[in-house]
Length: 159
Image 1: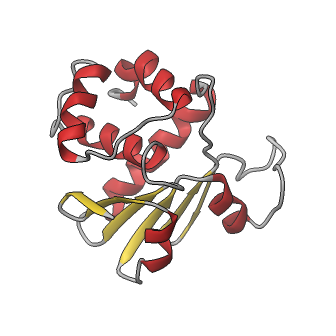
Image 2: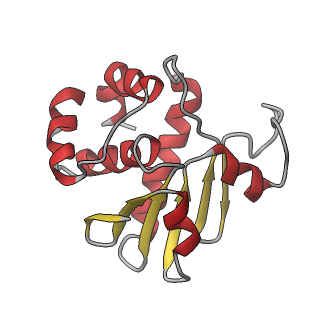
């Protein structure tokens, strides 16, 4: 687990298991989404919690790493809810954003938040990525999330 700014941490599944009650947690992985919502396999896209489920200080995101670009119609609402969740809790709680390995999805959310807060550049994804790697050297975005960020960077800064 690494603190990227005051009260905002990026981590993995292991970090999530060790996070105490002083953390609000963004679970950026399908397995936690399944556990939070209470289903196995796949959830119907018509389910009200298909993409996002918030339970007190826990935000469960139905987010997977894929080789193809993550689609904005699914990923924009996920990103917006993650940013809103951070803004809601950052002044009073420590926040952990985690995915399975802490390399792709969770740092991508953290990077978007830092850019939106003007802590790193908003000019382009590639410039933001270069600055973010100085903050979080373990950033290794999967192909799908990276294509999504590259193609939708300007929109993400306006969500």
